[in-house]
Amino acid sequence: MNAPATTTHLLPEIRLRAVPQAFIGALQARFGAQCSLAQAVREQHGRDEGSFQAPPPSAVVFAESTQDVADAVQLASQYAVPVIPYGAGSSLEGHLLAVQGGISIDLNRMNRVLSVNAEDLSVTVQPGITRKQLNDVIKDTGLFFPIDPGADASIGGMSATRASGTNAVRYGTMRENVLALEVVTASGEVIRTGTRAKKSSAGYDLTRLMVGSEGTLGIMTEITVRLHPLPEAVSAAICSFPSIEAAVRTTIETIQFGVPIARVELIDRHGVRLVNAHSKLDLREEPMLLMEFHGSPSGVQEQAATVQDIASENGGQSFEWASTPEERSRLWAARHSAYFAAVQSRPGCRIISTDTCVPISRLADCLLDSVQEAEASGIPYFLVGHVGDGNFHFGYLLDPNIPEERITAEALNHKLVARALRLGGTCSGEHGVGLHKIGFLPDETGAGAVNMMRAIKRVLDPRNILNPGKIFVL
Image (cartoon, rainbow, N blue to C red; front, side, top):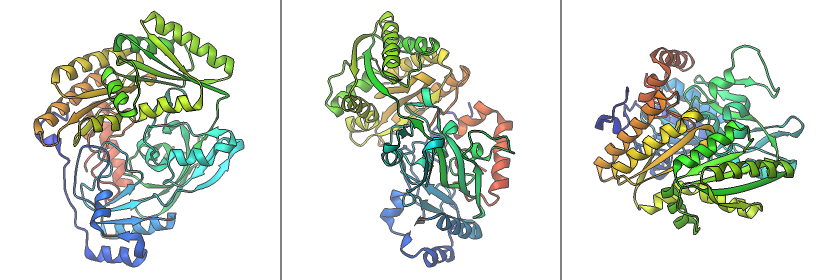
């Protein structure tokens, strides 16, 4: 592997570039109160939910329009100063860290729904709106935006990292659900990619190029996404299993049987224990699948009955249903709180979260060996996964004052990624590369593909100002 678990890999590469005082003065003259140099504000915008740390940006610009973003980027280009887009701050791989210095552009004030096209099943929004805010605005249309990464992330951030989450097994990822973009390029030019049409074969697919580029090729200022009809009936269920292998086997057979399940999440016994303590639940502390079915009342009933039969054949027990919105919300809130439940279980800890994805037929092979390694390490951990599409996350709980724990956790992560790649998988199913996965990218794509990415970056961002040091280092 290109990223061995050595102490040099445990910290981000910090190569600060000069931020001229003339540039700061120009920002203040253009943005006034929208530009902050306050230490607390800069520190807030210089960290995410990951475990890496770096110096904060030199300034934060609170953009309120596309023109604000364009003007800020034009000034940054003039002075060759790095620019880092900032959304909800919920990323996990160091995407927001100012490893080469520069400024942060906060997009949270750009949080409006610009147009709802219910007949075409689409909506155009600004990047700062979060997924929950969006669904609240459109709740009376009979439509919803299904991508649910867990955190209440911004649509801009979700597009930049090509996020997915719990509903991806049925509704796809941001790659399939972003139709069109307005983007500010590295020169400050405003361009548009894609349309509201269902399909197009007009030229290069610049929308897909930008989705997942992690702010390194442009800053999204408008995003058009697909909407989906609210299902007529929704039912959720939990089922406990004697082993992770039995739970995974149930998932694989469900998918291979063609059941159009909407969500299927795995939580291991450690995760269930943490969730019970945090959310005041009394779930069986065994590996558990949390499932959800969407469709007509009869279709949901048929899907659920089929999955219950499959689960029973694999030793599943304590099959419990949640049909009311309140009951379903309680279960999914508990699942989404697993990360914070883990943080609270070990006060002061930091979490290294893995993000591999493998073909579903190889899921058991990848998971079981990784569980054995985690158990043998002595590091506290938990496992959750969007196992319907082969994506899963180990969370290793570290004491930041004990360097040996980080070394152990990184070694576990490297073994896991190497295993996933051998099985035809990826180093990142949804979190993105950021800083943490840079060393794995050549192993997955090959050096030639990484060089092509670098060439694209150099053409579109010749001064290397857009979130530099992420995905790869120029």
